[in-house]
Image 1 (cartoon, rainbow, N blue to C red):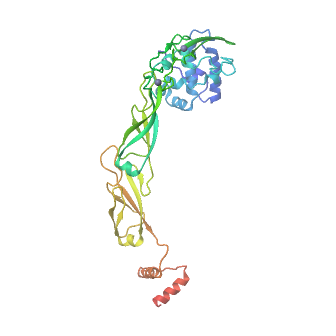
Image 2 (cartoon, rainbow, N blue to C red; image 1 turned 120 degrees about the vertical axis):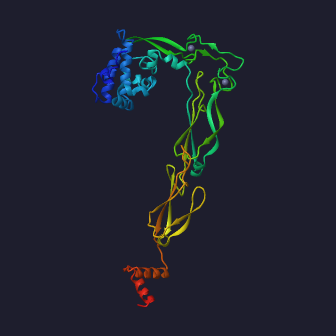
Image 3 (cartoon, rainbow, N blue to C red; image 1 turned 90 degrees about the horizontal axis):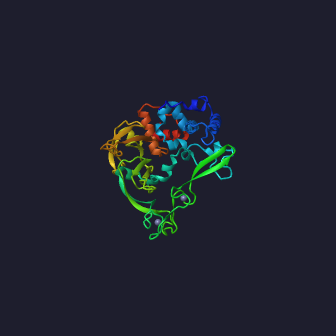
Length: 387
Ligand SMILES: [Zn+2]
Ligand SMILES: [Zn+2]
């Protein structure tokens, strides 16, 4: 296979071109190489090449990837992903293609029809859609892990017609308009010449068969919405915004395709006492300056109940103490994180006369001279102490 050409080179634009220039260049080339217009036997290939280049360069994310990694970086995008990006109606606007037919301005539904890989896309098996489900749990539930039954509404094969769309006892018949292929070829005359287009048959909506007596349960859709109870297990230690995948519980696939998956988005509510950081928990505890100075043993809350914490004498405000094993369970290995207790020394806002007196005495003994703004208080103090 020939080396793949640079997308910028294919469109004949500079690397730094803006969206407008890229679109203009593509429009010009697209008109030239449209396989129904061009005499060039390789026009379809050329059209595909320029369309691919345009599809990538007109999309910010894809263009960034391409600029960084070149063709090698494009492996993460499927062909469908790339080509579906092009709005042909917009590109060919004003050129009279398919005018008045209501949409499909390029003369074909999309590029898949043009290159013929639309057939398998439309008629082949397709995986069902994924379903998202949001769930809110408490920090305690996250710590212990939990099981819960949830109600999920998803599309299932209709049990009455088993997906055939026809009422049991009746049969569908081959579509007379398309002969069962689900597609019709149409030739349109346009100012640029004749366009052969392939469209899904509108008599059977691309299905190839006609159901005269639709199933009464699904009204001829072959699928129904059903609410099922699904039992889920949430592992201990689950983090906020985790996605839990339940395989096969999404919507039913089409034409024999596998079902999609159910994704449960778990939101762990904020806890009034604890802040979580990974598998550690943080807790802030106020203590008095007496406790901080003299030391104390205090009771602290944990997710597993209250435990004692020894505060040594001379503790400074802002000091953190580790309470081992009282954090959240690790998700990937055994054991738990820690609880960190940060103490905050609280200065009393109101003092009784007695407390003030003792503090003044404390200051005196410590050799501190206190010049309080509270003059009246000092006078009373002096009287009280008898100086
Ligand atoms: Zn049915
Ligand atoms: Zn048909």
